[in-house]
Amino acid sequence: MAGIYVHIPFCRQACHYCNFYFTTSPGNKDKFIDALLHEIELSKDYLQGEKIETLYFGGGTPSLLPKAELIAIVEKLNSQYDLSGLKEFTLEANPDDLSPEKIKELAELRSLGLNRFSIGVQSFFDDDLKYMNRAHNSAEATSSLKRVQDAGFENITIDLIYGTPTMNNQRWQKNLEIAFALGIPHISSYALTVEPKTSLDRKIKKGERIAVSEEQSAVQFNMLMEEMQKAGYEQYEISNFAKPGKYAIHNSNYWRGKKYLGLGPSAHSYNIVSRKWNVANNISYIQSIAEGIIPAEVEVLTPAQQVNERIMTALRTMWGLDLKGFEPRVADLIKQDLSVIEPTHFILHQNVLTLTNQGRLFADAIAASLFVTEEQFL
Ligand code: SF4
Image (cartoon, rainbow, N blue to C red; front, side, top):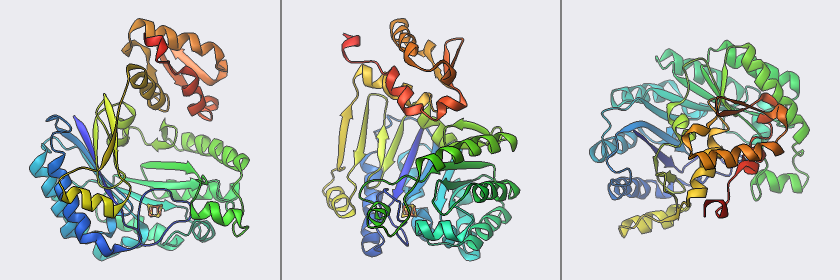
């Protein structure tokens, strides 16, 4: 079973921290939809006939598309792939899009399998939302969630951002309490990061925005882990928390190394032996697809890269890295490298390696120190 990700590259307003590919000008939207439908046909063999377990419409802001366009995309997918075993279909939505009329429209997609919303709340406080230049306000954040719940969608995840300079620890605590009180079963939470060349990066450099503090983020990440645990959420991935059994199937499959196909500009795909990523530009995407060519760069993974990919993703999850899944000599190489890791940062039990709460703060660095090299494979 595999997953399909569809990237809808349009947003109402540019959030200052964002480094996803999107545009705020909808001029090419019709051409984009045509190109996307065509790409679905062109890539029908990428997953080699595997059944599709999950669909994820992300972006950008998929909730900006009218119902008819969303239906056209799902129907095209249905004509090219086997969706008969579809378990999870997630649509990303922003609070400002989720008017009562829009929710009614989206509820009609239930018959096509839509059963999960990922809502970009980020914060329940106006100061934080303004700092990030989000298009919604705190009242919309809460009311949109209630409306989605009232429409009968229980399977909801929200994004929350910590480390925003406008948010002290007390407010972070309050943000979490509001999410808990609303009965949200899944929360993804990320530190505000200042990516190069984003609007936030430029504004901080010009002194128009307060800089982000790594210390504040580390403190608030610890608070996040503790509060989630107290509220009965499992930290099943570094940035993802769920009530028992409410894990995101689509994302969990990424971390378990399952195959996925990404459609649309900037979308990434992975089929164990290679990964590819589409051009992050609407016009180039539309032009290339019109010529029957998917504009993607492909990287064939060496055996060492395949192992490292596994280390990187599995260590971020509560299920950890199962060394029994590797050839014995590869498992031995990884175990040898554990000698350089702080002993309080990991647990090795029955050949499964997991990170402790302390270790999770350094997950990427720990993974990198366990990477195997090409030479070790010779
Ligand atoms: S809505 Fe999402 S994709 Fe669009 S600019 Fe904001 S963060 Fe980026």
